[in-house]
Structures are given as C-alpha cells and as structure tokens.
Image (cartoon, rainbow, N blue to C red; front, side, top):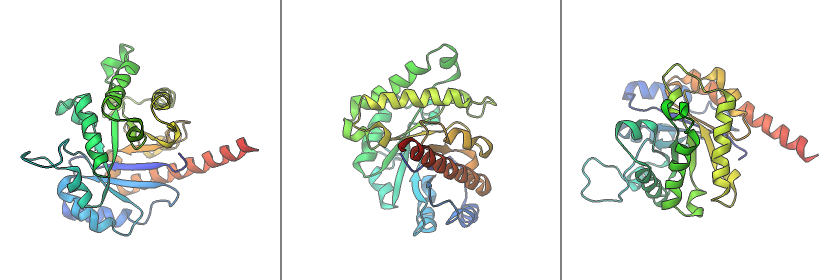
Length: 262
C-alpha cells in the first residue's frame, strides 16, 4: 500500500465547542501524501460532516450495529453512518471486546454490515498481557482473524482495514518495541496472503498508544500502513506531528521502492 492511513479515534470524548476548535486546528493541515480520518462519537457526526466537508480528512464512526434496521433500541446502523458521509467505522476495538463483551463472530458480522453499507471497517485485533506472556499472541490473532474468514469471502476481506492493537501496551506504561510490532504485522500480512488475492492492497495499521516521538519508527516498518491513534488525536499538534511522521515514512518507502527497481 503506497499511501499511509492515519485514523484518529476520539473515543468517548468531546463537546461541541471543543470539537470545533480542534477541527479548525486540523482541517487542511495534514500532509497531502497521507490519508487521514477522524472517528467521532455518534452525537458529533453531523458536526464532523460539516467541518470536514470539502477537506481531505475523512469521517468515521467508532461502532455500528450488525443489523440493518428494525426494533433494536439504541443501535446505529451502517446506513445511518453512511448518511453522514462516513467512510470508515471501527469494529471490534479492544474496549468493545473487553468492556462490552463483543466476541469474534459478532465483530465479523459487524464488519459484514459495514461493508454492506459501503463503509470500510477498521477491524481491531490484539492480545492481552496474559495472552502474550503465555506465548499465545499468534493463537489469539489467528482466532480473531479466522472468525472474519468464517463470515466474509476473499473479496470482502480485501476491503477491510486491519488494526493491530496490543492490549497490553495501551495505557499500561508498557511499550511494544518496533520488532514486536513488526512480528505481528508480518503475521497478519501472512494470514491475508492466504485469504485475499493481494495482501499488500489491504492496509494493516498499528494502534498501541502511538505518540509522535515513536510514530516514525512504527510507520517505517515493512508491514505498517499507518496507525489508529487514540489520545493523541485529541491534541491537534500531536496528531499533525504523527501525520507528518507518516508522510516521511511514505517518502522513505518510495525511495526504497525506487532503489529496488534499479
């Protein structure tokens, strides 16, 4: 994948006044060589639609229902998100899996619902500290990924964005090393190679407490196509610095490709 993708996940944060100030600091300021998106809480999608209209930054949501419509009080469908010009929706974030008990097959069904509505699902996968220390990281990833293949065919899988988020490195003070991240991204890429025609056409992101000072190293990894950014996406300066790091990594990739073709 030639262009990096940097996605901000605001989680359950924001208010109308603060959001507007953040939009004004962000819109039109990210590097043109990088794709950017902001995934907002449901109540602020209309505000985001207005603020991002005409800009290169795309709009996304943080969750959706597996159902299309009907008597599902409190749920939000993919078609509703599409009405607000959403391009992306996060599916299976570690917080949804842990706090709201979303299992692998539910996540896969939500990904299918997103695709049916014309949205690109950003499917989150990752292992806990207990699972990593037990040497089960790849087993956990395989279980989560295989659930997708049980629900989606190869053509649908090729339309996903996969985000690796090591649960053990989110808000714990621990940091995944670039070597640890690359090992898992490579594992995901290998799984994709067995299920889609072109594994390189599927974006694989990293989403474990990405900060500006580590972004360049993470985005320069051979199998990294960008990042899913949490807390730093709420601070314009930090988010833009991360986007700049992605732009630099894109240039480095282009140089490497040029040298390799000579």
